[in-house]
Image (cartoon, rainbow, N blue to C red; front, side):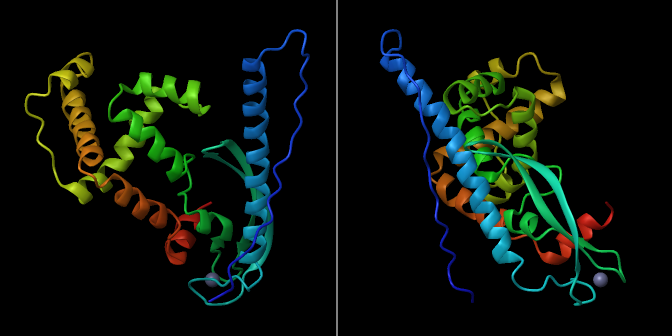
Length: 236
Ligand SMILES: [Zn+2]
């Protein structure tokens, strides 16, 4: 078991204010904007340190068990609770079998093609349990600075719903007036499936299992088996 990693994180920034014209509101807005940028920089730096630690030991091919060769870095964008972050992560290849691994991706655990980290998905879906997708997107943009569309939220819920169902079971949508309003304009089948997913989400939120559910999801996100990760990345 390796020793815990200590990551020194410096958060520091400047704001410039003209006291003749600027208000306390302006100060809060400036501090928030600069703080978010500083948090993103801190996250990028910390991820760099995590990757360094991951690459300290030889990276082995899950199939051949042989050390893999470094094959440069490629860029990927992920959406964190502090905003969107470009991650340039190291890529390793196995010459005999062609398997590719990206150790930082495996640690982060986000499937290729998924941009939104579990921390963001939790916040997005928490709001979506009570608000229509477009309204939830608007609140997230306005309050949390998370840029996401209603359609993207809908897709996130679709992807999450099998996990939610596994956790709390099937929910039967009988007589939910607010939901009928919410899904009024959707097509008949879409409305049924969409409403069922939202009901599931609500049940999860009101069941008292929300924290427990997401605590497990955060761990699962970081637990992609090396073999599965190797397989999924081989085709590219
Ligand atoms: Zn191999």
